[in-house]
Image 1 (cartoon, rainbow, N blue to C red):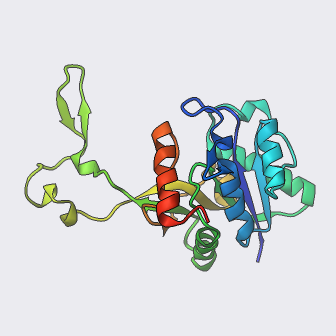
Image 2: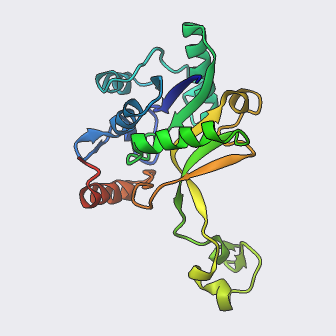
Length: 235
């Protein structure tokens, strides 16, 4: 089996939640949750890509590698695949080996587990037709019931279909999943040749709605604290 490298993307800048990756959740910095899951999994190396000295220090204390400081050109709000590609190139040059799978992990999904990571890797390894696998949670808001709001404040339905009958009953609609930001397992070719974390033929590794909590806003920290206590994720 080839080398699997996890890249945890943890830049210092965060507009909506300042210092988000260092914010404590149940007494542990957010970035340390992702590191704990990655180190507990079967990946061969855990790299934290950051431009922030304090995040680097916390990452090292948590057991991850921080072999470089992320360069300024990919330290702004850029596509995650650029950050992952930079880290994988660094690893390959340093270790003189080609990576089989890149595992991109975002610290904003703190309840991602080592078993989730291993399960997603196993799915990609066992199904050759897949070019990637991503962790996902069940949707809570139906796209069939969403509207655009035009310049006059009028509603325009996002998807076609009259909101009546079975179309208005959630149990009658197909189950849908959304990438929860936890982990993206990507074949090297898909990452470098196609420039994608989720390729055209992905697999979905499902996680529960509780485990899929994604922290983007202040309210998400309140929800995450409650979930950690309710579901025992803080243990």
